Image (tube, rainbow, N blue to C red; front, side, top):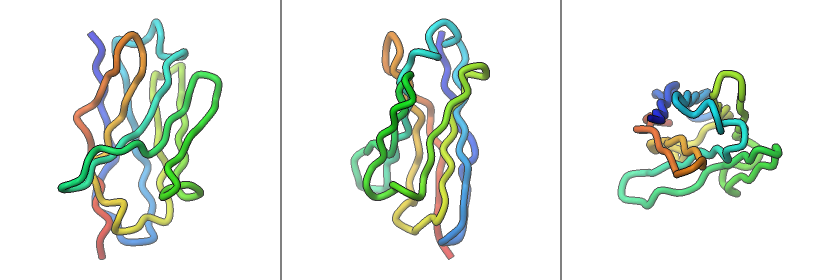
Length: 116
């Protein structure tokens, strides 16, 4: 059974940084060929794609985070990271890790709040 667990969220001031992490257990056989992604959902809004990284190293970023956020992966530790710099209040949301393997797998999310 695949489990996805995010961590690293919290409260940060505008302009600050956070690093989110996502650990996948039970995905060892296919993690290295999976596309990994981060989504976010703000209150009253639909869940949206923030960034994704495929098994070939190709990335895609939403225009709102390009140049500020960086996705990375460690295929040995089955982890995905999201480094978020220059955070803005509009980045406030629950951030979800997504793995595209045999199925789509989601974590429970981690809250990021950007406020002074």
